[in-house]
View 1 (cartoon, rainbow, N blue to C red):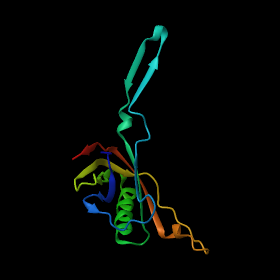
View 2 (cartoon, rainbow, N blue to C red):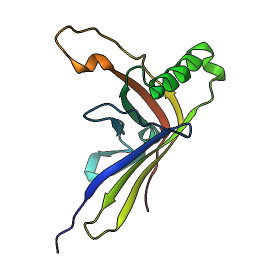
View 3 (cartoon, rainbow, N blue to C red):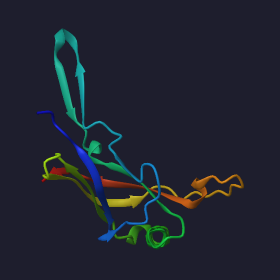
View 4 (cartoon, rainbow, N blue to C red):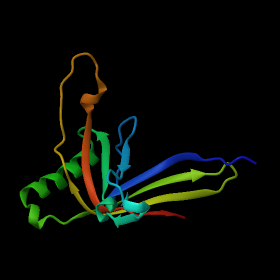
Length: 151
């Protein structure tokens, strides 16, 4: 029998607040832009390996409805970070994907995020031709750790 993966009902939380006012397309993107290890082959085929701890850092992009309660919540955290960076309590969060197997069984694909900060301000625009992007707030964050677990 072929393997099936049915995705849906994903959840994202930031500081124990469920983010429900999500926009369109890729509403949450969690990426690891840095490699977790390096490899070099030297003279006589000798190999050198190095662990890169920076590879544990995750980048998170959240697309929420502009002006929504979640936009206001995230903006208040961003404002707090900017007002007192050294005193900002680092953010925590979870990104949970629900994966069904087609037989009623569900696996939770969980990223547990910690050590989070905002890395960019929310950009804005005005468009007179109906561009829906003007109604989306995009939050860019980084987390120092985001291990993955399948349960």
